[in-house]
Amino acid sequence: MTENSSIYWNPLLETMDREKLRNLQLKKFKRIFEWAYYNSPFYKKLYKDAGIEPGDIKTYEDIKRVPKIDKGMLRNTQNKEPFPYGDILAVPLTEITEFRQTSGTTGTPVYQADTWQDWEWWSECWAYILYAQGYRDTDRLFLPFGYNIFVAFWACHYAAEKLGCEVVPGGVLDTEARILKMQELKCTAFAATPTYVLGMADTAKKMGIDPKSIGIKKITCAGEPGASIPTTRKRIEDAWGAKVYDHIGATEIGAWSYMCTVQKGLHVNEAFFLVEIEDTETGEIIEEPMKNGKMIITAFDRYAKPCIRFDSKDVIRWADYDCECGRTFRCIDGGVIGRADDITKVKGVLLAPTAIEEVVRSFEELSDEYEVIVTKKGDIDDIILKIEIKPGYESRQEDILKKLRDHLRVKTNLGYKIEMHPYGSLPRYALKAKRFKDLRKH
Amino acid sequence: MIIDDKIVKIDEKIREIKMAADEIEKLGGYIEAIKKNLVRLRASIKMLELNVSDIKMVM
Image 1: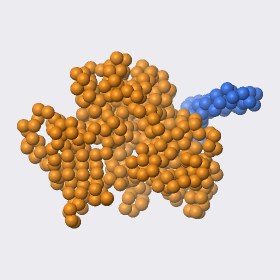
Image 2 (image 1 turned 60 degrees about the horizontal axis):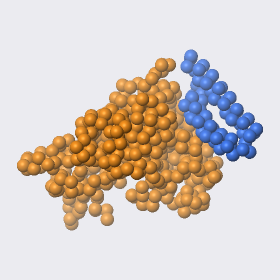
Image 3 (image 1 turned 90 degrees about the vertical axis):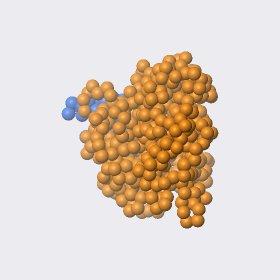
Image 4 (image 1 turned 135 degrees about the vertical axis):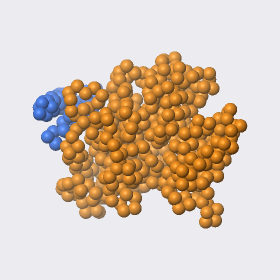
């Protein structure tokens, strides 16, 4: 660690020796475990039933004995007092200052309670992200999101203020108005989902504005894996003439990982979070790189509604490289590869929807939109891929289709029924896109 | 080692700010404007602790 390390938000933690870092994680795990045990009725019961108490966690290995929680358990606890969070709450209700909720796409929304301290912590996590991506007090950051009950880029807003950036809230504006405002104010950066970033570029072009002329230098993406998929990232960077960085976070967890300016993997903020990757078949914790597993995550410093060994269902893998930025925080490779619920066997082959996106987005002749539908006819699985060809390429349709089929087969080992749809006819999404539909489950 | 010394010194100063916040609360905590702004101050102090003081646990 050097004293003048201006590329780091906090060099003391970000370049900490790994053995020390691991020891710090153990100490911090014990602290939050003890807090939850003595302050949250939900956690106390969970741990008592499992026969584990604070004094039992002495080594890193002992952490594996701590029961996991999942979204279903978070939902169930909401049926208890205090309303609306339930008995997971570890502080008096009067200390809660922030309400957010999950989108509810997989069931009843999970309500998230934060004290002002927890909210400071959220923005502190984001400060690590933004600083690593080169945000400084010279930036004018535009935030084109809804500013509503979903956490989205709320903490990004507060963190950018902390860094000294000038933050322009682009809340209740339509896409055209947002583009005009970014242009008018000469904004240097913005943050949105990859789908929306691409949609904004499309809208700008329709308005006769070249997105590159606006002067955006960097874009931070979240909410979908796109910015970690090289072909999607390239598409966005080409459209905007800007650097694109990924970040991963979740309402129940916090902002736990970030791509730095090297743009390789995503660093896990290991000073604030413990990420474990679990083998979905054996249940063992995976330490070796490039092996997919399900993420189990702990937020060390979130106190009102602690998040301890949360089974996120996100599929990730450790990278087999160190980042040249000098951070000792371990990297994950390729961001969130999929959801444990989405990665599914089709025709006996494991299919990750992100692999399809990587192929589709590598074809400049195709639009940004696509849809994958898995169905079953009798005992046979079918995969339908809906795509749009950009105007001007229609005459090459057959050639494009053939190439697409070949690339998909090489990448995913599967054959697809490809449907061409008129340009602009597939659904456009402003927030998280839902492009993968497995109808066999219904 | 120089860094470790600095961490110890910064941590001492953080604790002093924390104690000052406690003293302010004792003196004027009955005034809402003081009490509620101290909540914010303490949250910021906590962030300093997470960034610096926690490191003392592994020194």
